[in-house]
Image 1 (cartoon, helix red, strand yellow):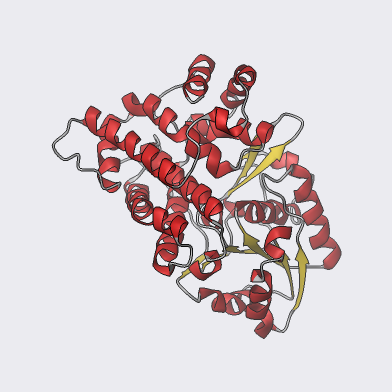
Image 2: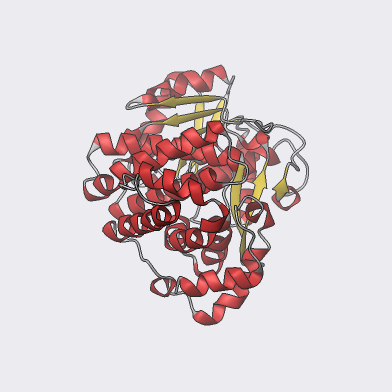
Length: 384
């Protein structure tokens, strides 16, 4: 067995009604003033009021920063940092999807480290722990509540970039499936496919371990059984609970094993065409997996079984095809596009996107099959 290191958030609290535990967590962290970081859409749903009510027993002052945007730009992190500094906040409560959590994590380390967020784009460049963060996801997809990563958009280079450091792991993650009940079907679908991509890429990563394998396979199983129901009937609390757990497990898995080429190829779609991250992953997933077959063939049969496919008597190669067919069927059932052209991506942009994706070496290094720029271009073209 190879040597590996396992990371996750300090405390993970799950289950229906677990939001009620947030006041105790805030007190345990010694907070004196709390900033809730969220987005303007979520601010209108009433969920922020629920979080504030849950925090009320602390008796502490609570502020709100609600300028988080989808696929957040580096500049939003700076604005959030300024809000934390000017308000004298010593605890950040990130409420929302991956964007709110990523902005919170990145802003937190700027409070205790010099320079700007640009100085920490990369791996293990953060010298000091940041302001404590409690992450409260309201979607079931990104897993950002348990990852040491913040993904941000560099507008100038039209690429997504990451800050990666153990110091970005939240002090606590509160995963309450009741907070996901207000997600509309299209967001439920996109975030669910995002979680599936995390689990799949973690399982076939060159850095996979026995621990991440268990987490990733259970996430795949839960998503295959529950995502359709969660999209079709958002009030089904059992499906919502299982999707929240799947997202959490997939998040822990990829935080340790890493993701690969699907994410690398998805980054230019988000930065250039503003395609939602989960949708970009979902569209590219089967095409990248077709490429990756040769690099991890035996693992595809195991994933097919986790998806509920009857492949016990099939060869590894045939089972792998069944797995890809199952992914495409799931995406079709929940009305996720199957081709890049449906997302407004132009054929003329493919060479530039391939060049951009090839620069995401941090993720491509985890992929089970090596990709050149020409290979990446070919995958994009197949996905059209």
